Image (cartoon, rainbow, N blue to C red; front, side, top):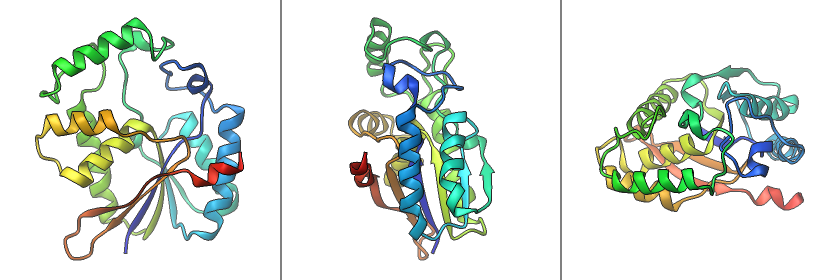
Amino acid sequence: MKTLYAVRHGKTEANDKGVYQSEDSPLSKEGREQALILQKRFASIPIDVICTSPLPRAHETAEIINEKLRVPVETNDLLREWKKPSSFIGKSLKGEQAKDFENALGSHRDDLNWKYEDEESAAELRDRAAEFLEERKTAKAENTLVITHSVPLVTMLILVLLGKEENALAYHEISKNVSIANTSITVFRLREDSQQWRLITWNDYAHLGEL
């Protein structure tokens, strides 16, 4: 039975600063410690392969975990973080620009193709997340560790719950009202009868009690 253990990368320096991060934002000291704790947690979980986003913070998280697992690591561009508006990089997550974006997004919550600037639309992100989930259905590996980012993870959750239907309002409400912690574990398992992914666990970060 195919299982995806989906993990958000470790905490980054940009996460600590509360700013929109660039693609090359590195793990912080705490983020590396979080990845080491995950390394211990996955020591007793059978993993056949690690699929990781190409961004450094995800790839480093995967490398730290794999120091013990010693399994193949596959870099998959479908797991990249949501491409933010270019003008947001380095700006505060609570600043005026962020508030303007949230207000504008709320006004266009019925349109998955809407864009504020040059970012990736919700529809574009949904389509690549759906492509990744479809890919894993036919992959050889039974147990896959997926290292990705918060927005793609929430998008996978929505796809598992709603499918790829054009329900923009539901997409908006779910994405607005769920959170995902750094190095938390989400588990999806493929149902053999329907060949659809099923949510088993969401945002499990009990292991971080060691920090």
